[in-house]
Length: 398
Image (cartoon, rainbow, N blue to C red; front, side, top):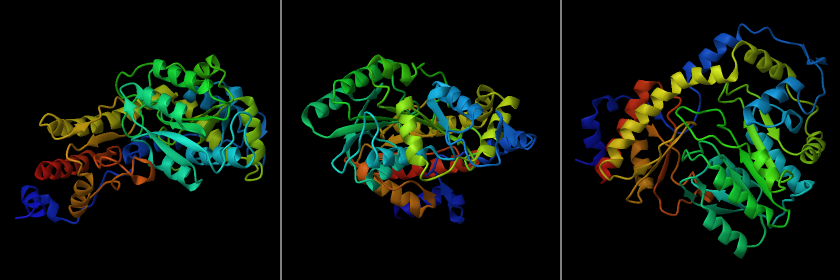
């Protein structure tokens, strides 16, 4: 009897054609429904902040939406702009601006290379790859990217023009960077020539599910080392309200925002201001902290389910896993360098996982061991079954 036959015998419910999916960190239907129920009571605004939201204009976003972004990112409203749905789109446009026009302290060229803490966010890596930017992997230590590796790279290598980070509840490892780690990084960056971009994707800035260390806001730390023109912070409401119609934010120095808006004026004549106004009105009904407590009600049980199943592996020396206190992801490392095989067998059992290597630049996991797990979307009973499939496959392969 082969592995597939053994696992199907252990779990008779696998004989159905039901497909299980742990690939993407999407808000669940319960999260979306909870937001929708409040949003339906919000009257659509057509005028706000003395602005006609129906018309063109306001390329930086309306002031009230910019203030909302500043609250989420812990930045200054005057150094935060509000745009449309995807912060990933803003990051793409930021890199394009750095490539075609350049910022005061950063310019991307065909020879640029960027540091990439990994395991990391696959879409970051694909974005950089599409620009032809060489990516250099930096492993993690407990409190953030490995500082010794960064220091060695900066001393030995040329054309290091940036770093891309998810500093809180990092995707997928769950790392939250300590202030000491960030200060040490910023100190190293300040010693470089000024052609350096700190791409700071704070997608999970307010997504704590358990007690998590407090972080000094990155703007303050950057100013300590005269890096305010090098820092670009990104965020959105996609995992706070509705993923399909959120608003996103960019915070940086006034110099950088002026250059960015000048570049973006060739792409658009203003964001969706009515959607921005809806978000402002929404958070008058339920403050952000209260909204996140509501999201926690749905997410925390999913995290507990996932953690309990992964513990059955780690307690039996069948690999290691992350222990996130928030965000949307778990990270599992096989101790047999066989994640390709694990993922392929799971696929045969109707469990979809991201392809092996997805959490590394160029889809190249050098140890063939990392698997990202996204437990947020499935209903709890489906999540239980998904984890049973994964655990069974790992155990049978060991």
